[in-house]
Length: 237
Image (cartoon, rainbow, N blue to C red; front, top):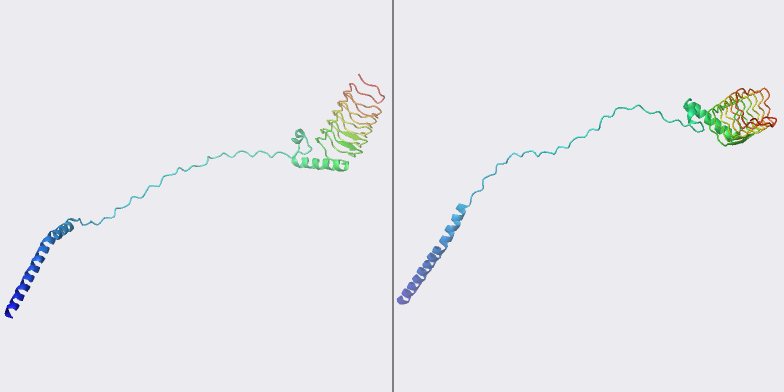
């Protein structure tokens, strides 16, 4: 019995010694690795705290400022006149208010064929056709009525000074006591017209037709009458 315990004791002692040896061996093997790890940890540099550096403000690109050139005030040009029926040459002599009145009178004449004592100065009414028109006492001075036809119309006491009536037809028209000084009556047909006491001084009646016209008391001093057909049918040379 004692022998068995001794053997058991010896066996356990061997086991214990063997276990201790294995532990020592294992420790011997792992120790260098631990040393290497500690060495690596020791050699790892500790990061130094970064001191914030002042930031230099970024430079914004400079955009050149363009300034508008200084403009010298120019004198305002006069607005062009609304001429309507008034010729540009005559419009230079009168105001816009007068032009507007003349244009309104022309509209009245064309619509009603009547405009007694109207201001119709400087109008341009070329090739118009009116019959029995009444313009008694109207002012047609410096107007252009060339090629127009005024059949049996009333021009008594009108102002036709410097008016262009060339090629117009005034057959049977009443033109007594009318101012026709310096009027252009070249080739005008005045057959049967009443021209009594009219002023035809310095007028141009070349090739005009005065057949059957009444020119009693009319002034024809210095009037051009070359080729004019006189009231008796005689034609001037």
